[in-house]
Structure formats: C-alpha cells, structure tokens
Length: 105
Image 1 (cartoon, helix red, strand yellow):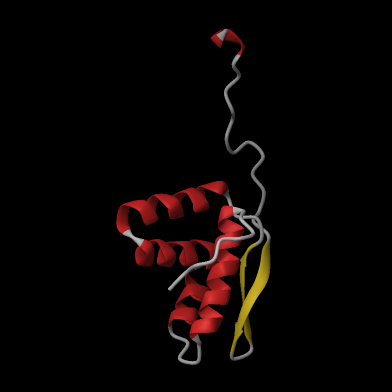
Image 2 (cartoon, rainbow, N blue to C red; image 1 turned 90 degrees about the horizontal axis):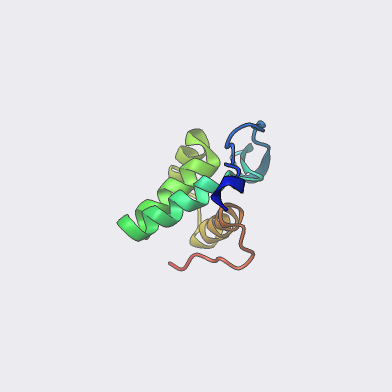
C-alpha cells in the first residue's frame, strides 16, 4: 500500500508573491501579501502556542507586511487602537485563511 504514495514536491511551482494595499501613512501606501504561504500561518500558530500572543503578532505582522511597513506601523504616532485591530484582523484572516479570526486585545 505504501508503494503507491507519491511524495509532495514542495517549491516546484514557486511564483512571486502578489501584494495588495493595506494601509496608508502620510501618503505612503503599505501592502500585504494577498495569498500568503501556508507556513506563515503555521509559524504564527506555533509561536502563539510557544511564546504568547504579543510575540506571535509581531512576527506575523513583519512576515506579512515586510520590515519597512512593519517599522512604519510601529512608529506611527497617529495609529489608533481601532485601526490597529482592523489591520490585525485583515492580516490574520489572510494568514490563516479564516473569515472570522479577530484579534482580542
């Protein structure tokens, strides 16, 4: 029976990651991965379990946004809690493929 199992070849159909706008700070548009790789969501869940929500959220944001956008968001003095929750909910939905995955603060 195991003779009929074919291994999954990971990475053979690699494509460039498409990005979509997520937020704007002082006229600069920052984007997020439109279809993130599954390992981003898996990494988020692992870090969430092992190290807690704060570290997991920071890692997820940086993975999805990229370093430049993540730093811009962390340094934005005008960011409100509501705006942050909206951004996080969208990022989490994309990363986990879940339409109902809100972050609770």
